[in-house]
Length: 221
Image 1 (cartoon, helix red, strand yellow):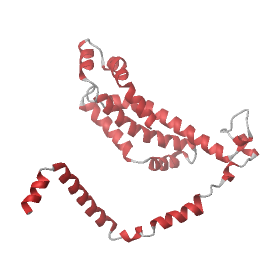
Image 2 (cartoon, one colour):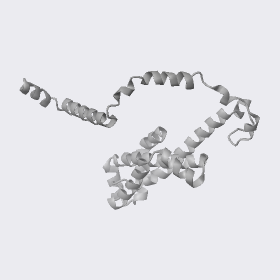
Image 3 (spheres, one colour):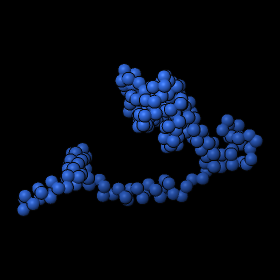
Image 4 (cartoon, helix red, strand yellow):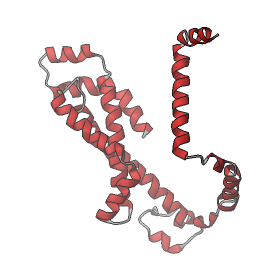
C-alpha cells in the first residue's frame, strides 16, 4: 500500500510539486494568522453591511452643479453643459489626466533605462546597476512614493503625477528590458557585423522589432 502511494507520486511529479507547495503555503498561512481563521465567519455579513450602508445607493451629490467650479482649470471652455461645473466631473477628469501624464512620462523615462539594462546590448557593468535602480523603484508601491512627494512638494496633482511616474518606470522598465532581451540574436549580430553602434542598433533593430511588445506594455500600464 505504502509503495503504491510512493509510485503514484513518483509518476506524477507535477502533482507532487503542486501538493507540496499547497501544503507548505497553507502551513505558513496558518502560522501567520495565528489561529484567527474564525474571523471569516462574519466576513460576508460585514461586506454586505458595508455595501448597502456606504456604497448603495450611490451618492450623486458630487455631480451637483456648483458655479464656482466653473473657474477650475479642469473645467473645459467653452462649457458645453453645466455638468462640467460639478466636483465629480472635475475629479474624474483630473484622475484621467494624471494617469495619462504619469504613464506617458513613465514610458519615456523607462525605455532608455530598459535599453541600458538589456544584457544583449550592454555588459553587466552597465546593466546590473540600472536593473538595481529599476528594482528599487518597483519595490515601493505608488502610495509610498506619494508620501515622499507630498512631503517634498505638498498635496496636489504634482505629487500624485511624480509618484505614479516612478511607479510606472519601475514596472515598465522590467517589462521592456525583458522584451528586448527576448528578441532574436541574429538581427542584432548582423547589425554589429555591419559596424553599427549600440545607439544605431537600438533605432534600426531594437525599436522596430520590439514595437509590438512595447506598445502592449504601455497600454497595460
